Amino acid sequence: MSRILAVVILAALFLAPTGCASLQTQQQEPFAGYPSQIDRFDFKVAWRTSKTKEGLAVDVVLKNVRYLLVNDMTLEVSLQGKGQKVLSKGSDYRLQDLRDGEYANLHVFLKDASVSSGDQLHFQIRYNGIEGSVAHNIVSDFTVNAITGVIIRDKREFEQ
Image (cartoon, rainbow, N blue to C red; front, side):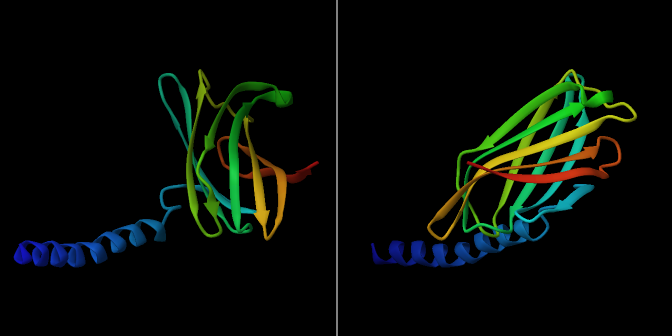
């Protein structure tokens, strides 16, 4: 019995550092493979788009760089044509809390969407940002050229 316990303990000691190292490596380059990025006051955001038969997939990585804790996060992405007409819209949300320095991966699918010259992607992030004992309901949004990723507009608001 004691030999089995010793083997289990040694296996746990051997595997624990390996597991932590692989998690740490994964966190070092979370924006790798994401061609478009923006550094904001609250998040570093990176995204990539890919065309599918059914529409446009938008994969987004966010890093919390501002708040002790972020919760109730919703990401909405819309594809806008000329005159900012919404051509397609989708959203994703995060149920888990996001602590300072942590990353969130979100995926939005824009059904029947196809990008044309002049189209824009509008990103809106709604969340509850907690710093100390104060919580803020925040709407943070930015608009980019759908093809190049160049920032067209960047704004944030505190909701009352």
